[in-house]
Length: 256
Image (tube, rainbow, N blue to C red):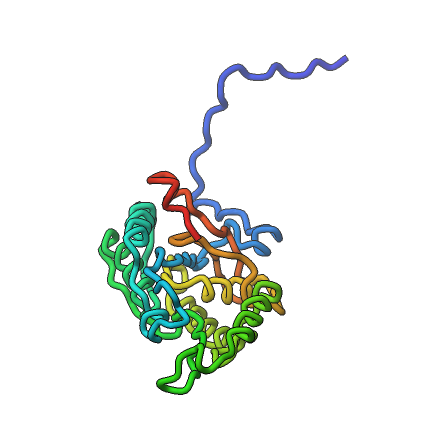
């Protein structure tokens, strides 16, 4: 019987490095499908704004009060926490909605990274009741029974079109996709942060996931983080509703 050679007990003598170095292995089919271990991907970090200081009765508030409220005291703490949480990450560009709750959240993040915030109007939240006749209150224009019916329909259907005098889901989708796809095309291979709104985040992620028939398929937390990677025509969702940066500071910061 032929004896097998003894297994060496010490590491073999390393060979000299190849000149030039050997190329890395090509991405596998799984890598290409999910943009893992693929060079040149663009990372998109979507951040929902902190809690807003909403009017006590939005139905009787002025349009400015319920369209563009500032951050509440809790919202300012949430914005600070997400700024700290992202301060150690590589982020190359920061974009934001012009609405002050989102712009102020972006400023907390950008300030810690030494970056400027670029404002894109198309990243604003869904414009509910924007088409009310000037000088007309919501309760003057819509019977309370019908308004209640619209809210109940939204709870079941999760479509913006159920609300009268409002921007439609298709109109929101059109401007949001133009804005975010334009940002991705402008910064290939970079990491881009976009501070915006729950409706905007749902619109873009729903398009990436191919969801139809619903404008909102999940509820983002205040100051939550959502990650996407993009390369060529591929868009892959990496995470939804990250809130560990809030919970680490104070569990009470995790709100809807």
